[in-house]
Length: 239
Image 1 (cartoon, rainbow, N blue to C red):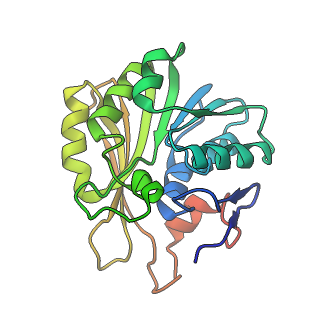
Image 2 (image 1 turned 90 degrees about the vertical axis):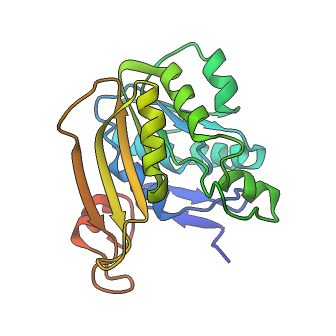
């Protein structure tokens, strides 16, 4: 059973009410994304508020909107935001991207998302957890269209996905004039194939995409690679 909270170096995530607990995907995206020049950030599907809080830690000047459709997760995110050092700069919003993208009155310099996945897997008996993990509530195409309508001209969109969704997502993104700027393929161990991919998109089409591969556990169970430790050291207590 997952702990009711997860403690990071500068904030704590309470997660007893949220379907999806703190996981490697969210931590990787929050640590990897470049927040430096963003003044307005949107976290789509914030869940516990993890990535929004990581962005707030990394960029002391950004204002962040944390969008969440699930009522329980929205309440949980609000608690975590309120208990953080950055509660004056983060706002939790209880809405779906499909509606929010129509009514929002601003453009974002950075949009981040750890979206639903497991498109073809069996549904979970827990409806709340099923909503958080399956793409029926937010398809990849809907995510991309929402991002395109909310992203500023020079803005960036960063997302983490299962590696086997990379090709389809890239196709949908290109069809909507979003182009890959950099990519990180994440392998659980040196011997295994990449299981996750982190991608950053923008409206500018470039020829020299920054492409890297990272191994999480290089030296056996909990034997984390130097690259993984370096990426996450500002957040994980163990590093």
